[in-house]
Length: 145
Ligand SMILES: [Fe+2]
Image 1 (cartoon, rainbow, N blue to C red):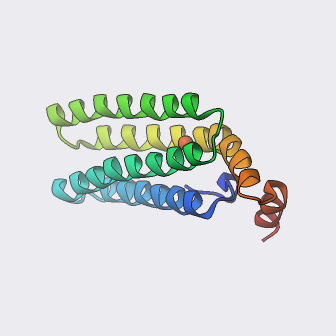
Image 2: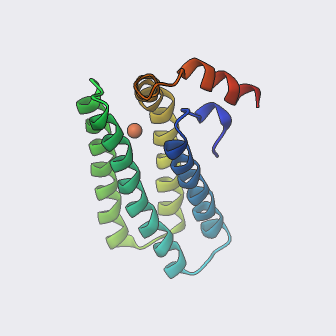
Image 3: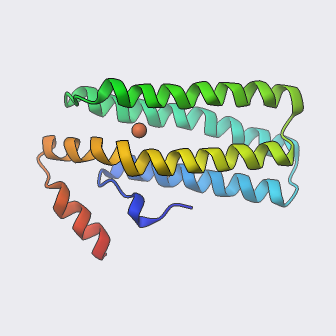
């Protein structure tokens, strides 16, 4: 579940993060309530595409503003996509079983939460300064809202 402490202060990125978490909640809900396989597959497909779109957004901003941690940040994104490719292979073999969906769902939530709290926040602090905003003020106001 998305919580306020995951806010990085850049609206474009925060709204994408919120949508990713919302999709993961819906996927979990669909799995637990025994929804049709096609629906679960469509949700997994959407997540696949949206994760790539989201990574491109982050990497694009980092390139534009000359973020020095770009390469290592990109490497983290690549590692997740490789792991995801292995999940895809497994999906091809077993189909969207309950066990599979629960594992993928939890793995993505864990990865995203950890990634956002560490490397995304670090990148966003840099980007906000480059964008001429005060990162501390943004973070303060989002905490007290
Ligand atoms: Fe990231």
